[in-house]
Image (cartoon, rainbow, N blue to C red):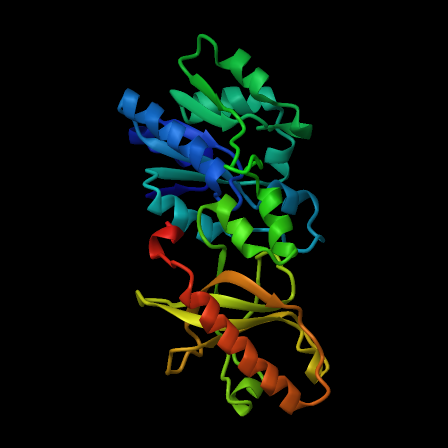
Length: 319
């Protein structure tokens, strides 16, 4: 898969492609419908399949002081799109110039002239251009007679009747419901990060943890989770228990994800881990002493192991 940052970078061999267009934060089941529709269109035309997306997310550009809300930071999104078999990604820089581009100019200059697209696939609520003035009706009107087919994918609903949406996933994660979030995503929600050195209190308690900063990821509900963990470069996923919080028993601090692998021995400092959130066990709490904390950690690890043994975990669920 090839990645481009500017419209002008697209080589001639990708001109005339079909593109799915959107922010695609989370790359959930609804997004998959859009991209698969674009794949079908590209196959019928015998052209390449592309995805046109924006980085940073427009919300990050317009509201830079807000806390992070991203389900899939840029590198994670690109990794998933590559697994999905996309030929190229136009990962356009969303900056002041693009934010002030009129919707009609975006269509004419970038979609028709720069990319020379033969087909575009978007979700029903796709909006673009200065002040979000552009919509699917404008796309339809301006693509007529220009050799660019437009397909609008209708809202997609789960078996329970709920709408597949990034907003729903964020709300579920922030309310401690990772299983329901996974049903919308089509995979367990996970974060990836490098293990940093901490205060090593876990080691003193008999539970050496790997500490990871959330970085650009959304902050889920603080508390204790049953998790699956994979070490970068390895195929095996390990059972684990994780604490996401500020460590109130030790007078707090910045939010960290502290992960204890139940079946792993080895040094993890400096390595990257992928941590999949499976089940929320309990809120974070402040204990009266270290012994009380240790007893609860024993319970948490035992409960995590019991829960994870009953879940049909599949690496394919992460595709």
